[in-house]
Image 1 (cartoon, rainbow, N blue to C red):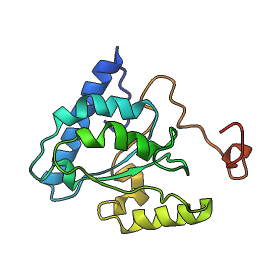
Image 2: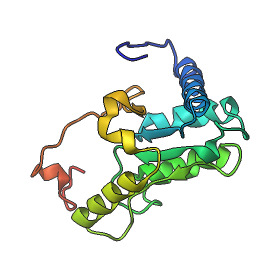
Image 3: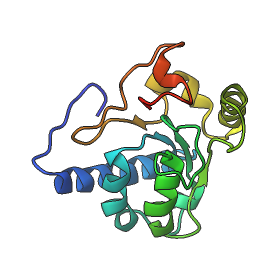
Image 4: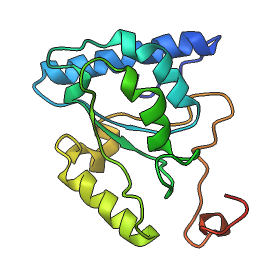
Length: 171
C-alpha cells in the first residue's frame, strides 16, 4: 500500500480492511523470519483495530500476536488509566481481546518527567528487537496515524509550543 490512499465508505469497512492488512503484514514478516513490529496512534484507530483485528489473527504460529512488538507514536505523558493515554486505551480495548498472551508493548514509563520519559522511551525503542528499522520508517515497519474521521494526530507542535506545557489548558 506504499504510496496509495484508500477511502472506505464506512468505518466498518475500514476496520475490516485494516484488520486484514495487519494480519497480512504480520504473516509476511513471520514468513520472512522476522518479528512483526508496529507503531500505533490513539484516536479512532484504537476502536477500528479493536473491532475486527482479534478475529483476523491466529492465536498460534509465527505471526501470532505474542510475537509482535507494539509501540505508540503519539503517547502522552499521563498514567495508563488517564483517558488521554494511548497505551491505556489499547490496554482496555484491544490487547485483552487478542488471541494468546498478546504482544510485547513498549510504553512511556509513568512518573518520569518529560525529558527522562522521552529518553527512557527512546532507549526502549533502541533495545526493542524488531524496532531497529524504526529509524528508517519509510523502509521499515508500519506506523498508522490519523485513520478515522476527525483524528488530528498529524498536527505538528514545534519545540516550545505552549500546547506542550503540562499545565496548558489547551492540552
